Image (cartoon, rainbow, N blue to C red; front, side, top):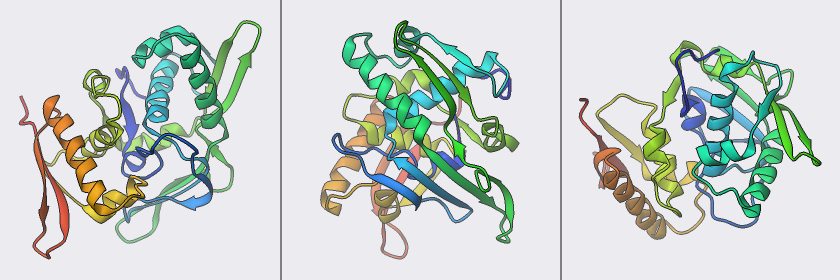
Length: 257
């Protein structure tokens, strides 16, 4: 176990702060080829593969949790129905088809991540000389319709030094359909313990791979904030101007119990 005592909902901070997973619209996905993704200045993340969405992100977190009882680098048998129930999805044909496509997408995805120290030197890197796959191996038996998967052992590097967030999974599963932007915000806000957090709107829009005009983005972002308020994930949030006159999202977290 590389995250002792952890159930489900943990994810590395550097990935939560990046555009690696984004609340993209349904339809044809952007194809990345060694694309430098949006991140903070203390990280460089390059990704090759189909753009991942929040449903893919939920799946990754569930697979990491399912692998807890197994040694890293060894095959993990996967009960499809149990997994889909954990994701609050049905167990019909359409959901099994989604799972098949998403698992393939994760197996094909390749990333390179380099975390940097304040002086610009490298703290650690994964996938630099040898490709790092979200899933190192994936096996599917068409006859039995059973999966097994292997996590890349280097996931442990990204979870090192407690550089990961613990997402409130129960509340995450209550976020309404079509509110993936709220899921993205939940992951981002979890990376900091600051009771008040501020994010520039232009950076958020780029991180979320949002291509429509800023007016529509502001409306969608406000709806996502309302969803987080409804579920009491945050106390409140609003779009305001910074001291430099730039639009920013300001979020107040729920006070600690």
